Length: 158
Image 1 (cartoon, one colour):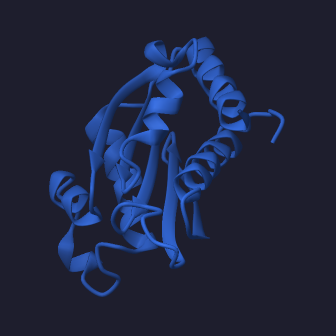
Image 2 (cartoon, one colour; image 1 turned 180 degrees about the vertical axis):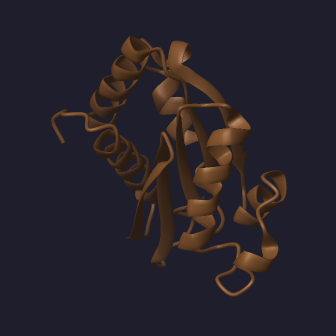
């Protein structure tokens, strides 16, 4: 599976550097962290993860500044960036992957937006996806891993 090739590249690079990765996932049921953990170096590089059903829960856990998010809302690209920034510090990791789904991803055939953000040493990369249907979670996991690989300047077969 392609996602495992990318995940393997990410975990091997982080293991060689002695770095730790963490995830904050809303709507994926922890799929990104599971794929990372299932690689040979996964248990060595995967630190803490926060897995919730809705982004509002992460806003509370990370104590993100509501006044700054009031206009954009808890489900926004701005909130995903803030989660990546604050999550890296809270989790005590070098790399923080954020998947910001509004609720369980892929439970309907209606198109939905998912925000991704990756913080590598305080540099944040982000992406917004429009996805739908039963393969939506797989698409989100794949996109999150690819974004992480790009943020790490990792050259893998993408």
